[in-house]
Length: 502
Image (tube, rainbow, N blue to C red; front, side, top):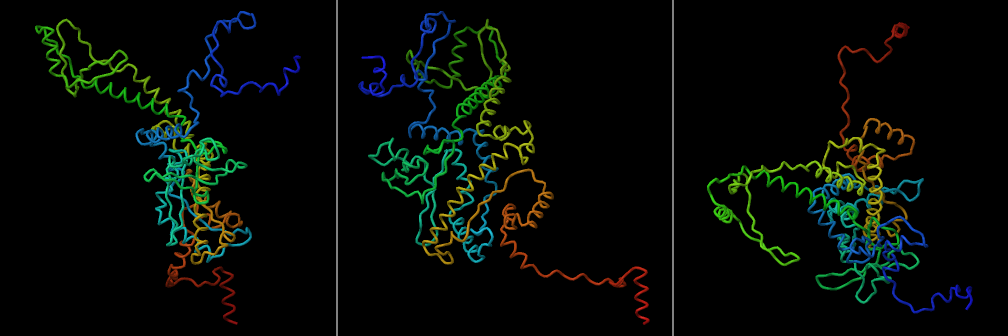
């Protein structure tokens, strides 16, 4: 066989096929001997190089539903138990969601106004749906799930009374159907189009209370996800990259706090000059609160513990030198480590440090809330994502009402009107300058009064109705002895006199 025939690509795959191992993907450790004798030349001493297969527990890539569930559960535990995670996620929600979204109706034709009667009916339908599902609370839950779980599933169901029902699907309910491959088209519990991997077709929902499954079309399930690519079907929690930072910081704070608490609980140490050691040991045993069994590599052992309350007096035998409790010499280093962990968490969430740490002396609130600050740009981007998701939900509610032939909602309603969802950007506002700018844009027919009202969190139609219901303004009373409205200049008075004489 010639050299060129051995390089024939058709011959490369004639050997027996086998499953790829981690060593094939990442390589194997290289020893010092192999490194130092590479190509027959002496190299500088190097430590062995180990591939990731040697640290399988450190691989953070989410490859299975079990791994995704584990990361999501850790994120939920942090949100529920870690004060920094709770404050960060709730703070982000207050800035992004604020007082809630406002909806406006516009015409699908840019040069025409939306039909007034149809707009009123659509807004009334949206208000009815929002009241039925407690939208003020649900809207905040959407964003909280988006951050804590990395995704949010909303299921809409048409009801006989005409008011669409809505509830949240838990992420662990979305699983592949029984009998389907976890790596096939139903991977991660979502059926997608092979030609459009980012376009879901159906969702398989498992009810663990009845151990049954049901497949829902994507037009009734609204999936919001974050932190992943389009080809990936599920989302990652916002706390995924900072789980270790939050857990480590919490453990360090706990250790520092408990150490200081123990040291502060010891008031003084009393030395007995005449008592033997056995008597002191007996005294200590009588003060013991209990015993716990600890399992070790060499077996188990019993540990006697004692509750130390404030004002506790410690007894020691004669001959031992009393040393007062140390004043925690590494307190500054511990505080610095906790601060670095919180800074890493703030960097992962792209929010100001004070939002995670609660330290309002670290930086100015005003500097973080200016119009061009990175945090405000993040808030605007998040609001754009949430607004698009909420718009899809409300549009589906309108479409369901049209198919149910609700009053004043025609079948072609979405061909005539377009629903817009707006959020208020939390910037430090110069209200006078902003009002003057809105007046200029409105006079130039660049910005409509409806949009301005929505940005202010007001309902334009309600405000117009309030103006219409105002009583007429009272006329200013005449002031006795006041001059007439005629000309008040000397020439004017002269002309008036000449006219009267004539």
